[in-house]
Image (cartoon, rainbow, N blue to C red):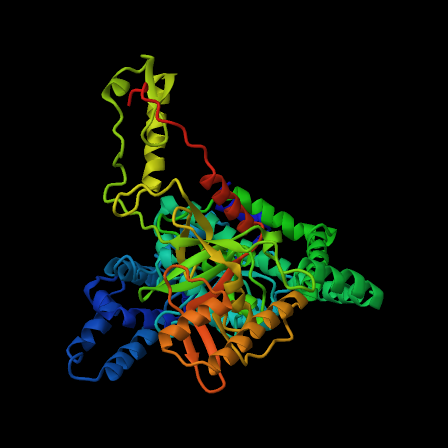
Length: 632
């Protein structure tokens, strides 16, 4: 499909172009000549009177102020141009525009009359729909049911109003127009169209009120690229228009979903809540709110899926599907939108605000930040999800220890992207059909293969690709025992390093769940939170009893700080890990202990369990004796 067929395919049966190019009034032509005085004074017009007027005042250019100089010329030009027929005014204006275009850089150029005429003919824009700004207002006011109308609007009206096109958008909003608009401008490059579009669309007068897209005129200069540029622009603006339409409908739908879910939950009897929410939550070691959250989310998810099946929404959804057949050029430096990364992160990652403010118990997937040698390192807690949970009334769990695996940043950079870490043997390159025995494996050992040259080359290329992915800046091979996280933390990509994982006492880590900050700390007079589950409350009481008991013992004894430190660790059964020394404080009525450790987030299920599964697989691999009969 060409651009016109695409426009018709997407439902745009009426295309209107609004541009000061179509204004051929004597005043407009005079203003255009004056704004291009230097160029026009050098051009030989067929109408010698124009040159005479310009030359007549040239002697006064440096004597008068700019305003006086141009106003004097303008008056004479208007008087002369008023004697000309509309066709002559258009011819003169086109000459000036051609001279203006030739004198400016590529980025500053306005569309030439020739290009404008080509585009109008290409898109079959009727003569009566090629409007100047003055005529546009009356046209918009008299137009009804314009859902099938596409407005192509020049951003500026010459130099007199650099944002006149945005005033047209305001007029469309006032008319409650359902049309679509292009804003044409040379004030942005084709790479920065979206930035300019966001800048305009975020203004209060436009936000969520009208659908429009910004097009750089730079894309329309080249006739060979014109068709693809217009098709891509049509797809972008139609995609956004239909996305807005479907999201507005969904917004209203969600209100009814919320009411429906509320009613379903409120219909539960006290006995239902006691047996299936309180008792179930207690036995599984989760908050009763967790059960309600699951019920609410499952019902909401169902109704959202059902929403897309409703027949009244099918036309909008069908239009979105049609857009798949129209290609859009993707620039090499194109980067994923941060909002998409944000949505993906919500699926996988719970931040510290969510888990710590709710006094959530530790679980598989918790991420900790630990200060080691004045440097903050990140670790992920791995443990069987069921066994790590605190259950029942006794505050105990099936596990005593978990795994803390470091999160590492791996920076890979290659000066030459085509470099091969393993060189393809020349006899493979030179013997297309010669079958050979080659021993190959993932990094150093080889298995016997009989393949053609083409297959062997592909094998080596794949091997090199795999190796490149697993080399860090120091060219150390670190890829066999690591796993890339499916999201970024603070815009940094982390890898789980299984090699340096360590065991940790889970009873110590419980301390992070007793304060809103998620710090690994405790003090003897710390108060209990009502947000804690029954099992966590019991755990809190056990730890507090230990603190109070030890505090009383210490008050009756005398000893050095070193002796106090040793006694505190023994009495509280706190084991050191990673050689991190806790900070302890003992005052008149207060004993506290803390580590430079805090919980900063949690990887949701089933992603956390997948990391645990990968860890167990890697660390339980079978090791075979070296086969000394193999050739390398």
